[in-house]
Image (cartoon, rainbow, N blue to C red):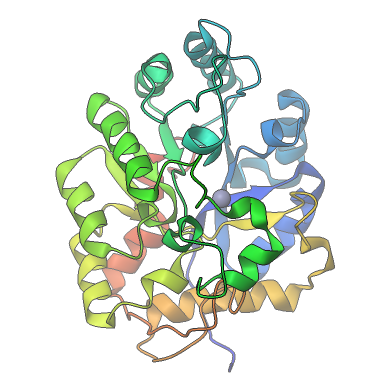
Amino acid sequence: MTDFLHNRSVIDAHVHVHPDMAAGLADIMEANNLTRVVNLGILEARGIPFQDGMRAFRRALGDRMVYFTTPGFSDISPGFGERMAEDLERKVEAGACGLKIFKELGLRHRATDGNLISVDDPRLDSLWAKAGELGVAVLIHTADPLTFFQPLDENNERWEELREHPDWHFGGPECPDHDTLLAQRNRVIERHPDTMFIGAHLGNYPENLAYVDACLERYPNFCVDTSARIGEIGRHPADEVRAFFIKHQDRVLFGTDLVLGWGAFDDSAQKDMAEFKRFYNANWRFFETDEQQIEYPGFPVQGRWKVDAVNLPEEVLEKLYVRNAQRLIPGLSE
Ligand SMILES: [Zn+2]
């Protein structure tokens, strides 16, 4: 891949960066014209005390990082939704700018009766309502790629990846299916019109642009990000993808799912600056050129196919890269 010159300022609205890696992130941001990042849920996910983590982020990055907190599901005794709402309020007061929901909701977290807690469990309504009241968005990851819900054998397109990470496979009888999970999420969005929901990974249905289009049409309080799904998005005919991004130019946020210091499966410490540069360049190349059959960011881990770039118009790029995140996420406006 030849070097692709990119000289725009960009907000990456979907990263997971451990406080210990914040200084490294500052270098990556500098090298790739990232002015701000939105860091999601890593403090709670890694058990790092909130104030300590926030202090470390501020020291390394000042106002160049905003943080979304995520609720803990270890205590699900009665009143857990209300307690999550109170915790969100406290953390927003202490500097959090939004709420992150990981895919474990709907797939892993269980109530005291042993049943899965569904995404639209009414006990969580006070949490969604609180986010709206506080004026912070909910970045919600529900379900996963379709293939993760299909039988796990050599016919599965992501067999190699799933063989490495069998816990990412949700095709067993104990798991709700992909469409059931998205329907649960949609009921939450519908019930809370005053809360803004950002569907991670193109609303987790990049395989079906018509479905995502219908959700965006139906719910004014719904937006999506592009994180970790250019491989899927770019498999559709480029003119269809381009039309989607132009139609929904006020509703799509740029994000990558950059992970630094997550833990066991994360090899970011071994990566050098050139690798991060290649990763971001693959993003710019997809959105800003009309090249065909190029490698998507993260190729070939998520599959060995290539994608066609979509060459978005200038004003659409500006909204995707900067303006939509600034409008939706407190702490990012200039
Ligand atoms: Zn993520």
